[in-house]
Image 1: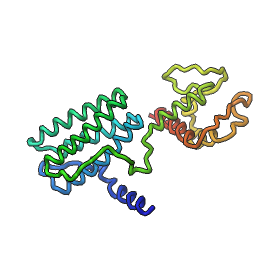
Image 2: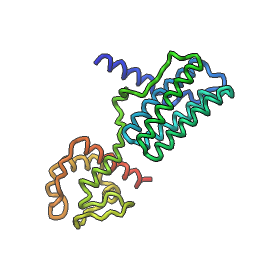
Image 3: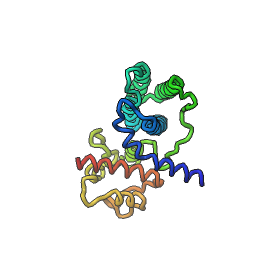
Length: 239
C-alpha cells in the first residue's frame, strides 16, 4: 500500500508536464528541460499502449499526437533530422494502425517505436535508459477502455428494443412503444445524468406506457458506461 501511495504521489507531481511538456523548448535545450520532456513522453508512451490495447482508438490517436509534438521539441537540431525521420516512419505506421483500428498492426508499430526510442537513447549516449512495452499501468484513476463506445453498445442491447439510441443510425426499435429517443431525453433540461443513473439502478416500476418499461439488471460499471454515453449526447446537443 505504501508503494502505491508513493507511486501515485510521483504521478501527481509530474502531471503538470502533460500540459507544459516543456512547451517552448529553445534550440539549446537544457538537460533539465529535456529530462522533463522525456518524462512526459514516457507517460504518453504508456497511455498510448493501453489505449490501443483496449481499442480506445480516439484516445490512442490523441496520445500519438502528443508524442509527435513532443518528439519534434526533443529533436529540433538539424543533426537529429535522421533520427526524427526514422521516428516519423514509426509514428506513421502507428497512425495507419489506429486509423484502421487494427490491433495486430498497432502492436507491431508500437514495438517498432519502442525499439526506435531505445536505439536513439544508445546513439545519444544514454543506453542505460531502456523502455519497454508497459506491463502495468501506473494510472489507477484512468479507465483506458472506450467507456462511451461501451455505453452506446450497452444502450443498444438493453434499451434499443423500445428507444432509438442514435438518431444518425436510423434505428427502428423492435417494440412499438412510443418511447422517447435517447437524443430527445438528452435534450430535456429537467433530466440529468444522475436521474438516468437512478433510473437504470431502479426496478423501473411505474415507468413507461402502461408501466411496461423493462428492468435492465445492469451492473454498476455498465450503468456508468451508459451514463457516459448519455452525457456525450447532452454535450453534443449543447454545442
